[in-house]
Image 1 (cartoon, rainbow, N blue to C red):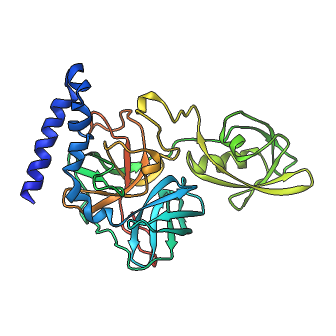
Image 2 (image 1 turned 180 degrees about the vertical axis):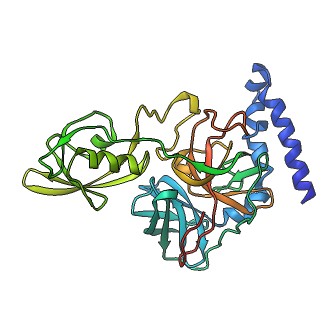
Image 3 (image 1 turned 30 degrees about the horizontal axis):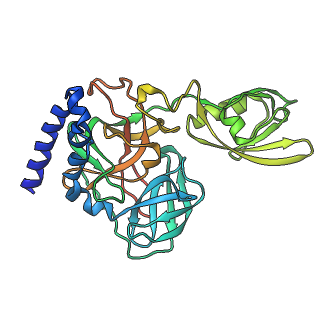
Length: 332
């Protein structure tokens, strides 16, 4: 164990040197190999992630990764990020088997979903009771022998306030019988969901909508990244439309964020941040400390704008803190 920690610290030191290397050294591949997220540095964490890797699954649609998943019960229960995964999805187990996964529960406030698969004797993650402190190393396992990314905890667990939701419609009252959509803005959540001008929204997430203000209130209550199930009167028919609420002026490819961020990356009752850079589709899996125990579930790829005085460069990763099993409530 001491050898492993020493090796990690040595490689981290080399990584600092490589991050400031000259252009010539970068051309020789130093940065790709020895920087903090370089292949050699990540290889130093292979033993650290070994146990958690055996409890990490891939969730795919048409063989394309939409999220990672965390095995929380041996009888086929998987915890993952809710907003990026449909109700039914393919699950690729660590041994390569592909099985169907079905959503059984959703915890909207944490953006978590619990799926079940037809498999038994799965490896379950080993939870770390203590919360990781700022400056501690973490790693994000996938299916490979080396982690997807490594980093350090940059902001301790706290509430992450929800950002204001945005649907992308012009709405008017409709004789106290709903909210009339007068226009749909291009390239917005409303357009992607299939809403159209002259639709009348009469229910949202099971609640009756009688006017414009009630619909606006529900959109704001859900927040960016949340799901809306809208019952819409369209001509003489009623149709159900599912929309994922967006964020006004949101650009998921903003260069400031060094790549795409999660549509839902705020509004969490409890989350800590780290600077291990992962893609939105790599959320939902476990995050481990140097002991190999799981300290949380990667719940969102967020931004790098200053949000806390405890970190000079806040992290792109947010992690849900808690434990879970199919028979009890998920607690932060």
